[in-house]
Image (cartoon, rainbow, N blue to C red; front, side, top):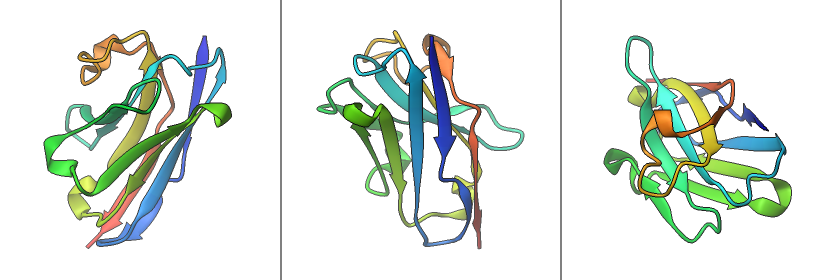
Length: 125
C-alpha cells in the first residue's frame, strides 16, 4: 500500500506560480510512475503530467508544456509539480497518482492504483 498526500495548493492570481508536492508513505514508490491529474467542477479528470521512476522521462498534457514542470526526489519519496504562468482555466483539484501503471498508460486514470486526496488550486483573473 502507498499513501499519497498532496500539498501546496491555494489561491493565486493569474500569472503567478505554485509548487505542488506529493508525499508518499508506506511502500516506497521509487520504482513507480507518478502522475498528476486535475479535475475542474463539472469536468472529467484529466492528465496533467507524469514522471517515470528515475525522473529520466517526463510527459505533459500538450497545452501545459512549457508552463508546468514535474520532478521527483526518491530519497524524500516526493514528487513535485511546478506550475508557472497560471491561468484561470488551471483552476481545479489536483491529484497525484501512482502504482503499477506502465509508462505509456500513465495518462489513463484507471491504470493508477493509488491516489491522494487532492489539493485545490484556484487561479483568479
